[in-house]
Image (cartoon, rainbow, N blue to C red; front, side, top):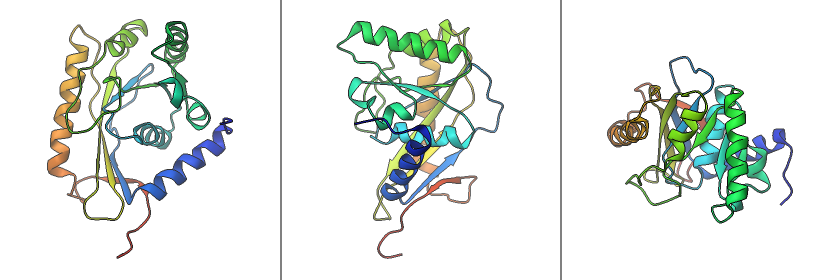
Length: 211
């Protein structure tokens, strides 16, 4: 697939989310976002990359994120994905250097530290890349993001994104980010249906047949 230009890729992503979801809610960060900065999110659905791309665009931010080789072609490349094929160490090292350079230059990096897409609700152990990027980028802080998708009351699923407070670099960074995302996912199970509790609509999707 030939990569579309970025402005067209953005429209394709937005159209995809509008057609696939009933509505996407978020709690955007209410604090200053420094540079460099890493966003770390759980990876429970295929759309997580699109959700993060759209949220950061709404914040006025460009972004980079690492994906396996099959996801970096075409559309994914146009929205900031960098191929990091696990079976090609040379290509993976090049991808790491590219993302690190951009991170040091102020382009936020999105990481799914579990390292793979998997079934919810559990979190897989986080890979060491998160702490490594943070340390090499001058001890860049991490903004944890919890993403939850649910198909229940509507024909199409709804999604929730919650941005957690920044976590500074330390020897316990990986464990601290894990705990933050885990706690946020637990809270989402309790508060996601409270539509009036500070949730904002990130994407208004397609209504159900009965609406």
